[in-house]
Length: 65
Image 1 (cartoon, helix red, strand yellow):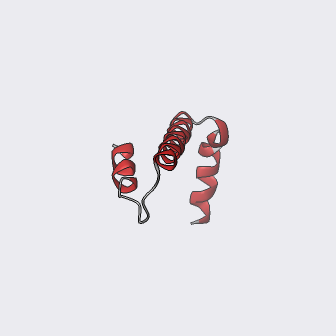
Image 2: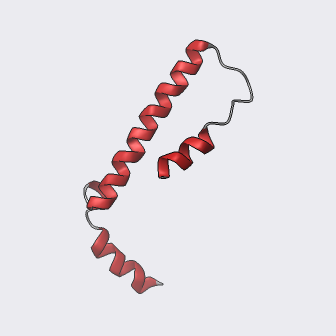
């Protein structure tokens, strides 16, 4: 569902038309970005990588509020 919304927002046509080469480069960049977002989201869900300390930081964050 997240990617459907992301793709819908990003699917609007560009203000300036792109050449075929530019369009392919744009699609490749979008594909890489989607993969990065997917990997980050899965890291968040599994509390790995930069999200390892989330549980400990969550408690400290709530105390500050």
